[in-house]
Amino acid sequence: MSVLIVGSIAIDNIRTQTEQKDDLLGGSASYASVAASFFDSVNMVGIVGTDFPKPYRELFINRGVNLEGLEVAEGKTFRWTGEYEVNMDNRRTLNTELNVFETYQPKLPQSYRSSQLILLGNISPALQLHVLDQVDRPGFVVADTMNLWIDVALEDLNKVLKRIDLLVINDSEASQLTKKDNLIQAGRAILQIGPKYVAIKKGAHGCLLLSQDQFFSVGAYPLEHVKDPTGAGDCFAGAFAGYLGSLEKSAFDFSDLKKAVVYGSLLASFSVEAFSLDGIKDLTQKDLDRRFQVFRSMSHFD
Amino acid sequence: MSVLIVGSIAIDNIRTQTEQKDDLLGGSASYASVAASFFDSVNMVGIVGTDFPKPYRELFINRGVNLEGLEVAEGKTFRWTGEYEVNMDNRRTLNTELNVFETYQPKLPQSYRSSQLILLGNISPALQLHVLDQVDRPGFVVADTMNLWIDVALEDLNKVLKRIDLLVINDSEASQLTKKDNLIQAGRAILQIGPKYVAIKKGAHGCLLLSQDQFFSVGAYPLEHVKDPTGAGDCFAGAFAGYLGSLEKSAFDFSDLKKAVVYGSLLASFSVEAFSLDGIKDLTQKDLDRRFQVFRSMSHFD
Image 1 (cartoon, one colour):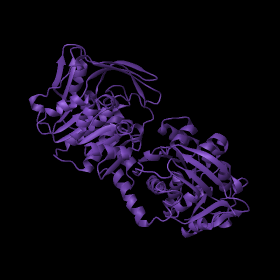
Image 2 (cartoon, helix red, strand yellow):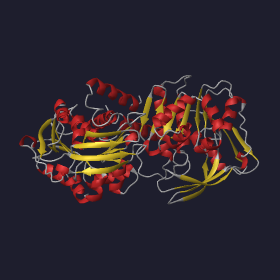
Image 3 (cartoon, chains in turn blue, green):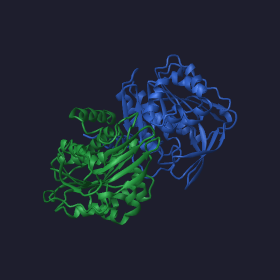
């Protein structure tokens, strides 16, 4: 089945301690859609300005991403400038220009409204709800979020949590949302708000997956060097949803979700090895298969 | 084969944010020997004072630990008082009384000198070397260490590293020793100093195992509450060595070491659920088997 992915499409300026790159393709929908495209067909929903570079549009098309839901509005594309500290775990937003995103109200093309598998990428909870309202009968809904929305839009975020099946969230945000440092406690507290599953991303420490009565833990692919962590979480969510979509099922069991976590971790690991989408856009099936085998042998013990 | 375990035997006073317990059985050799005893026969080497409580001695005997190498010296047993902060990851030493440990020079009984499998528990590197010198032809040597020895005995610690097969170390200590924040880089730097393998313990984030060309990552058993983290690392090292001993082999392959890491993590998880050795001393084979199955299902994904 096709995966419906909504999120931001951005032009990023990235500063790390050693490099500075401007005018890169970024945004949660961009990363997630390209990551998902390795597993399933993708219907993207988002907005860009008339300045959106043609090569970036072509990158989506080359990955087979359906752009019927991509609105092009008079004006400039959303822009974000961020800086990473030495350890790459902490980043600061230096500048945000919402531009065409400021008044954006996502409108789903008719053909998207029967979507079964939905990824609400990292955008404001209000927009996530607005998208969900336009889907006839959602089958399985995955949502991502970030610290900003916990700070400024908690009420809407709680509404989202009651309408989704799985939340993707990182460790510090899980603790922020639930006021619990222990991630098992934090995960269980999130399940009590609404979703049946929560995936807690821990960066270099891997990822946890919790349901009411089941638990999964996978390490991160061992990387000595991280070039640009931007979009790693979006790639995780995109590959996660894309893998589930590829199963062509209406309900998933825990073992499906485990493998989705592994594929999410896998795409995230490729993503951080290069700036923007350069780490994932040209991946081959062989690249995916080889790294999947590494995940398998580094996790299994008999 | 029997496992030779050397380390400290202590009387601990422990303060957590909610509880305070005095005169507990502690010390690296105590935890490690009892943890190892679930897998293999254990020859313990250490020292206590004439004040050492009889019930603690009986605890070792009940677990089948061979005490021929346990010296009883005139005077008081080594005492340690420690306090944990809220998150249980940070602890402060409030008081240390070396007592009989101050002038201790471990002396191996003749029957221990042909030991093949050796765990140099967390004591000063000089004492670890002194023990190693008394073994005829060590087969496989595991060593543990701590931040204190990196600070005050780095030269001796480097000598230890050149004579062992596997180092057990926690994440912050691995970074401290190698001056590398990235744990994959830190692990590889440790392998360059000497050992063929390094196991990096990450507390609630689990454990990594690295060799020159292989990698393993296992999550921690999901615990919502930790009562007393004291000795978790010693239990890890003890169960690790004990499991290897139980294999009755002269050489181990990476899959053996993976399972040793899992059993190490498993005993550590039981240990932190209670003060002192209360979490592990009465474990049954059924307890071990059940938790091993949890580790398996939380780590395997097909």
